[in-house]
Image (cartoon, rainbow, N blue to C red):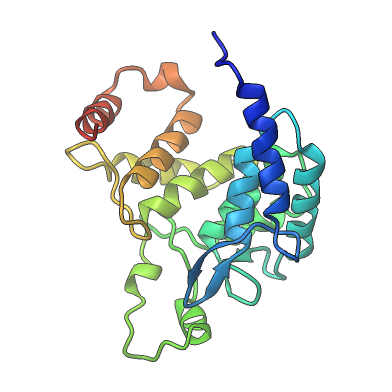
Length: 234
């Protein structure tokens, strides 16, 4: 495979940018909401994405250790400091720590994650959404139904986190939920995102790991539907 000219230099510059982008607490943060700015979700997501880089391992190790230091007593991580833990943020922290081989904390995270699996096999964001609603100052008139319903943008990542953590518990049910939830046009519907690309990637990512990789997926109907949907987005 031909490596584009200047790719190595670009990666080095990217790591330098990420290094200076750490907040005063040593985390990456973004997405300002009513719950404040995301810290643990963003750090887990970013750290995992950067794990394939050839440099910056010291940087990543430092962030990972800080994530471990901020793991909740329930085993999970929240959107940011003080926010009740959720399945989505916990999944990205598990993925990041697993990628670096830091088993400490992953076991507790997996237990927390499995507590968010619904009977249909999918994963909900919050086990007790009222607590996070109270944190955000939302009164009883606000509906939390979507926060405790199985969501594909959460389930895809949670399933992949369980697989990467080395557990099979809950995985088959989650994969069956994903397989039965693909839209006829080829995508998977999100809840927390405006666009279906993230949820579709996450679900295919989980299926690839859970069903034995590319060969197992082959040219099946799901893959063909996704390809058709993606081609129509150009």
